[in-house]
Image (cartoon, rainbow, N blue to C red; front, top):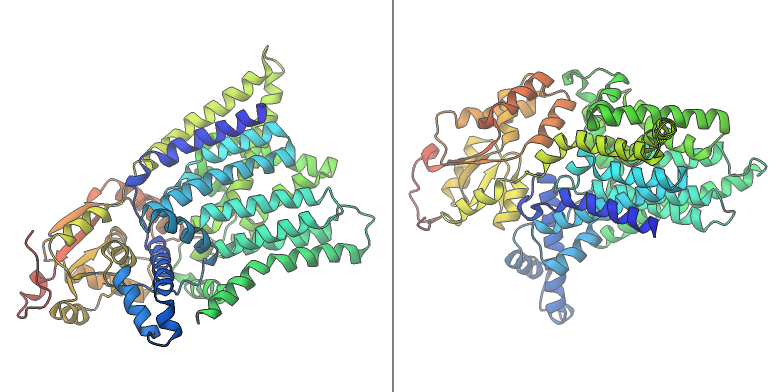
Length: 553
């Protein structure tokens, strides 16, 4: 019964900030919009094929007919989404039940985040006892950085937490059993997490290395150790192989190593443009700003406690947690490439950091509680203090609301044409169900405008910020943003809409495009945090044809 109360407390405390005005958030990034475009296209394609299966079998319908029907039902999109195949089975299920809308990923992320908190509880209890498990679950749901990825921002992170944490829990269970069922379960779960967010490769690699270096029974011969490692690694690749076969079946290719590590190679080639030093102390700063000084204090105590347990007691769980928290971050610190320093690349460590902080909080509370008449009072006060300190991060995040909804209503009431947006075209495409164009070329924009395909040019807050603070951007990207800024410098906006840019500011600061001083400047300038709409008629003159006829406002 006590365990149920702890689980209920984690769910209730975590649900309040996640579901507060969750219907009002909307899509915040073009990455998430692209995923939803693919989800909508796949669901529409399944509906069309189901309704016209007879026509397809009798060859009365071709692939072009299917594509036209899908376009009419959902809008322009495609099935090419190479990096996150593990998301789609669940997104398709949710969209099939609730429809394709921006509430589908919001509900999905909130539920996955809460489920991940329960997985953190299981991991903490398995590693260090029920008290650590309960506190770890609460610290996880009360983390501002965790909440960022739980409210329609980078929807691949929350499910990755769930599967990776459950896989780690199953791996600890496998250490207590000679049977391979827990090894198989751990490999499958961690392997599925890889298909949701494949930059967790460093974390994935640690499990077989640990199994080889630290077997459950030191008396086991090497061939027995290798068998468990091969079984774990063999089942871990199964989800990726299945998705690879599925994508080949629809004539698409999912190549995570090429897409992700190709991006890494590009970032490495651009190191001269980055301002971050290759310095492991940077990650201490990341941990400090994660949830403030209180959580950093518990992390410090937790690291010391786990280190002592590892060195003095040879505790495997302590060694594993400490390694999962620190080794990947130290390895990543060897490069200044921005792909290694964005928050979503460091996000896999957050569940393990929550457990480590819980170990420090529980241990320090035990020491202090010995001098109190009610020992548990110290633990309650420590958790309450941490929650109060974290409120300064949590409260602003619950106010996030995408400005694209209002902007879409504005455009839809005035024209049937599409939109051009250099950075956020997938978002416009999702909401308008029309083709959105990502171009900064003046001649191309005029051709699209004259042909009636677009009427408005949208400039996102990210584009405005990057054009305003261009010093460290690579030349080609800088040229595009400056081209847009120069093009509209003398053109008045027809409308402006407030748009949250907290995630974008963190990203731009951590990849070295902005300094911390510039971030503070931007936060004091609301005019930089707006979606700006420009009427292309004011840039290129009125249309001379009947194309793109407008409805009256």
